[in-house]
Length: 76
Image 1 (tube, one colour):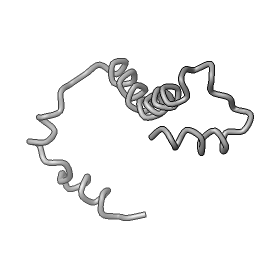
Image 2: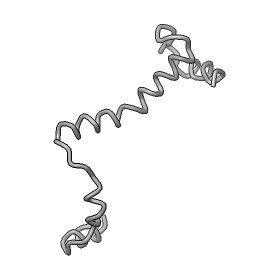
Image 3: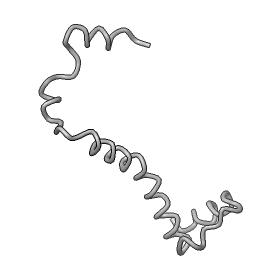
């Protein structure tokens, strides 16, 4: 752990004010929903591409995922 960030915060330094002024204010609930969306976006994008390569969500079988991954890599 570094002692530099607490020292910068104690002296009033840290993130410059022009950067803080560029960040829009948002209510906490909106920020929470945005963070949930950003957290889940890569997983959902991967699921979309996997289902597209397999030919539909019903054709994805989780019985042997490694074999299915090798099979689907041929579509990329």
